[in-house]
Length: 77
Image (cartoon, rainbow, N blue to C red; front, side):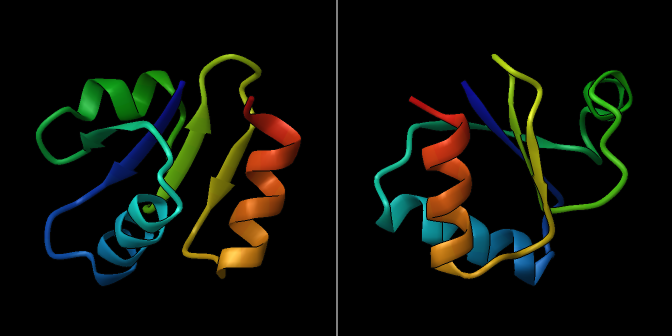
């Protein structure tokens, strides 16, 4: 499962969501301002952060489509 950690009003977080939606990626979202405990548990230090809960891999910060695709291909099936 992919989790996107974000905050409201974060433009890169919003852009990452748009990109994931266009790529038709199934993901959950955690607003770290509303669920700080999840952010702490998953050691999220920056937003946006994508986390693969299966293998623990993560992608931190907004990335271009090619980088996100490569990360998903390597870490998400």
